[in-house]
Amino acid sequence: MGTTNRIQTAIRLSPELYERVKRNARREHRSFNSYVEHVLDKSTELVFPKISDDYEISEEIKAFGKCHLVRPPQEELDADPKLAYLVEKFGI
Image (cartoon, rainbow, N blue to C red):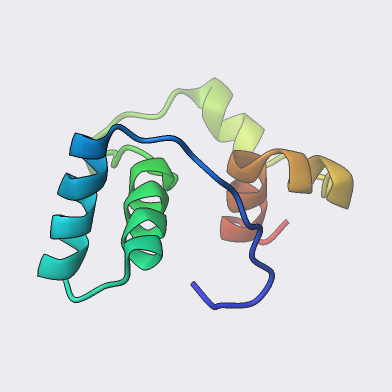
């Protein structure tokens, strides 16, 4: 995560939660803001399940894989991070 293009926001925390977050940030040698951003980033990152090598793929799915895919418009990609991830991963 770079430091450009940041949106400033405010949140309300209970004093107890604020102190816990502050302690955890200190433990990790981070600023409060950096720690909160890190925790939010990790808790919301896209994770896709791994498929074992011996997983049998149906003929229908194999046929779909041979389809010519069209890249969605950029507005659609901006609005859907999962779609954007897949488009990037598969080079569409």
